[in-house]
Image (cartoon, rainbow, N blue to C red; front, top):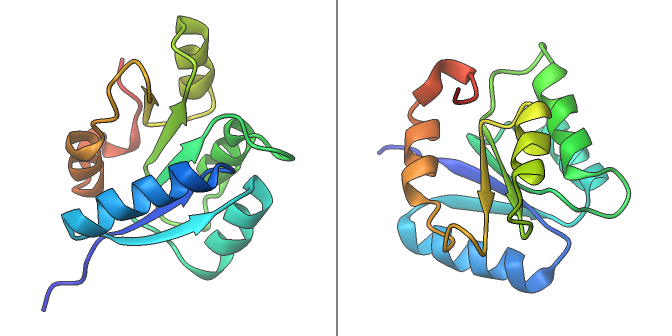
Length: 132
């Protein structure tokens, strides 16, 4: 039996976390959630997800900072990160990619279609590098 890919959803908005959980469960992924950057980092010490969907604007440690910490940790295997933001400006994209995110998705701008990116990154696409 093939093990399901595991996605960690990090967002302080309960409705967003629930939406991602429902969509991803229906698509056949295992889903865990965290509400803060601190919680996401603590979770990652216990379990290594196959992909992280990270809100950019979190209370406490920002999604940008959490992503940078995940990417800087050479003791753990490569974990793709998609930074999710309600912002639609180019500055948000640059901020996300500067943090080491493998993708940036503006929920409003991109219509919330994450499936192609999830499948590509979980399968090892991009070899751990952000798109140019």
